[in-house]
Length: 92
Image 1 (cartoon, rainbow, N blue to C red):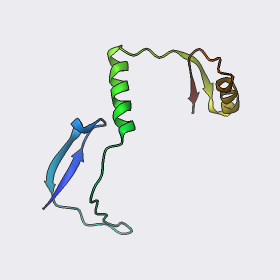
Image 2: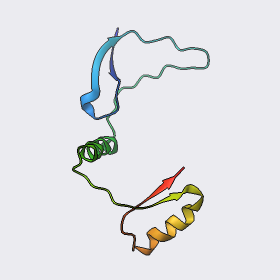
Image 3: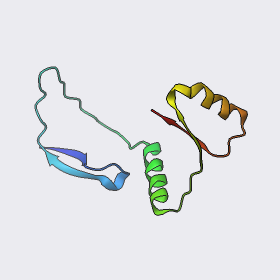
Image 4: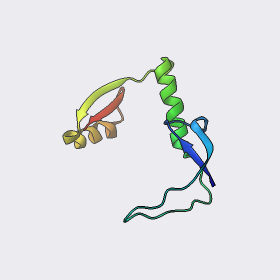
């Protein structure tokens, strides 16, 4: 039985737990990869903290405009002017 780090929710290190699991046998066209070392991405943890602040109402985000992705060039030009007064959101 190997020690495995598992998670069932998005988040920081607090959502990780160590479990003893028997590894599944790889299926057709699959391989097993052994990871010797890994670290959570700092960007993911920062995004989780920002999301928590926003959900609590402690972080206010001003959205200047929602722009269809087909107009991405216009959004880029707006950002380059340096005169935006809020975030530009691309709609896919």
